[in-house]
Image (cartoon, rainbow, N blue to C red; front, side, top):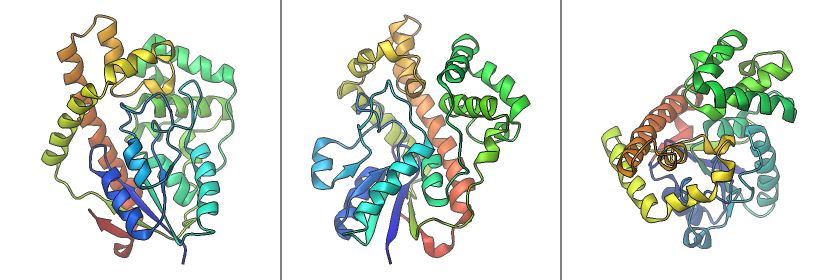
Length: 288
């Protein structure tokens, strides 16, 4: 039987290394399910697989877009479906690796068809975010989609912006599109990290240090012209923008990245437990 092997979990949990070893064992390739690794300008801040890692195992959907473009879970699922179809012609197994829960959910279970939002609506929502930050988005979302506001994504600007765009344009709550099909679209197994939180947080702190050495500051500086894009309203980039603006000194900037990454990892853990792991049978779930 053709099968997907989905390696998922919070940031810095060792997904990439495990996925590479798994793909080598299965003699197959990897599809990245990461909402930032798709952008070619963000290899350091997104912890994209290195050239050496990609030489060991072919990776798909890494660095194939510009940060000036937009991308979402529906587009990811369509792209991944196409690649999986090609790989299944010659492989029985395909590895999916990433921490973007909505991308994985869309691929495994599908979404109702979400309408394409016109540029004018997207610009309106982004302008609201620039003027009023997350609080402004939350105020409108509480009225249009209270169910979304009860979930674990309310601190993620990109998710809030997307939810508000769709809600405004479609006239129905974004959360109503997210139920998707209850039946799985593929046979699959999930591999989820078993590291305790203390170990994970230590890895996060080490990763921030490694990213700085790898050139994160210069990477963020290179995308300054795009600082208002959704992909850059995320951990590692927004803090350096504050540093460049003189709000933070460098050490404060790095400590904010560490702190916000830990918070992001905790939100990811909560999402995966409630939205994905809870619907699995014991036979589908493996630790690493």
